Length: 282
Image (cartoon, rainbow, N blue to C red; front, side, top):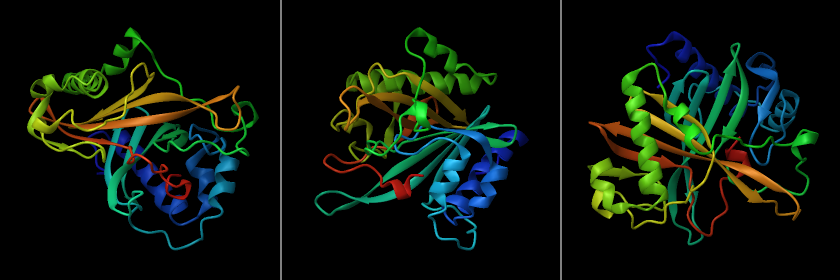
């Protein structure tokens, strides 16, 4: 998953992979000085921005031997341009006590060989002690609304451009508008759904309560090989201040096969359950 035909993309993947296993998993915060930009921008709704703040947070992780692999288990890494998306498999327990899996996503922007910006799929609301953006708190998630979104579908590789367009149109027409009647046009017969609120199989499409992203700004579209990740932003009401809002990020990853969508992953959780714990979503 770390390999790429482009040496620069492979290096960016390796940076993300090494940061996660050494700092997030093993608490080696001293390595942040060489892996993160000093002005590291944080878009998580619950974490402060800046490299110094990052080091303070992860200093709570017990120091241990750096593992060979990341935890939770790696599902995919997708790199394009200066972005890397890392998808991890999380095992969760719903309100009834049943275990199920979902996907935890992180997207990083790389600048001059260091991590410069971070978004992830944690949708938890900020606590009363989380600072506002202007005081070093989480920075707002921003993106493109309207016809300008087409600019994010461009690629020097014509095959990637086609796959981006397919994923974008499917997200718009099927997952947002609920056009399940068009499923045969977009999905393979054996379509696999990894959203815990969806159903596997093209004939079952539209019966699940997939989350709505109508009107959401498009933050990024990252494609590599047969995988395309669409990243959108949301605005939510702040739980402790009626005059404020906060932003979160949604990820939808698609695997393309023979011109149709064969699989879909998102960071959704089952209804009635709190999102991923902060400790597993850094």
